[in-house]
Length: 150
Image 1 (cartoon, one colour):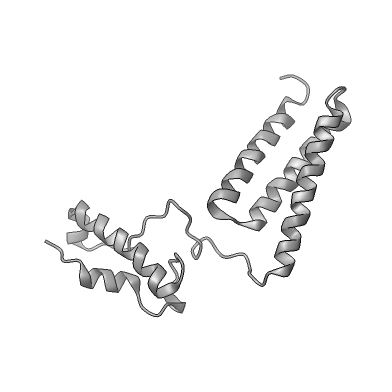
Image 2 (image 1 turned 135 degrees about the horizontal axis):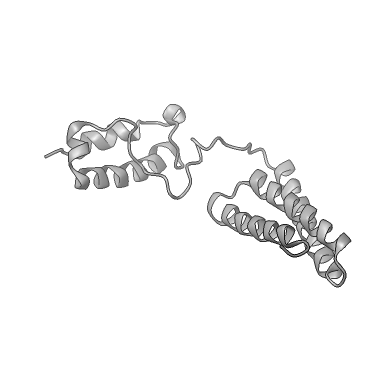
């Protein structure tokens, strides 16, 4: 392993994770964490490697500036970090926790149920969520009532 290869790998990893969090989850706390790591690794490389100081210092300053912007946005907003159960993300399966025998045996019913729950969550809860306590209806119950099982 060459000098600072580990640190460069960590910078790339955190840039990739930062991009994922910015595009998919939009979680300011996670984005801030990855920016902090990028700053640390870039400063470490800048202090020890001849020729890369300017590039790494610019990367560290860029990441610091974005961290400040995120921190400012968090201070001005009244939103709090939501638990992963209430912010399920793009790959969530919209299915109830327990499936009936009919639902287990029929892939088409599961697909219909999943699509229905996704739509009804938005209508009843205002956002995708698996915590229905603040919703005007129970999306699983609505969809089970409207999708017949063969």
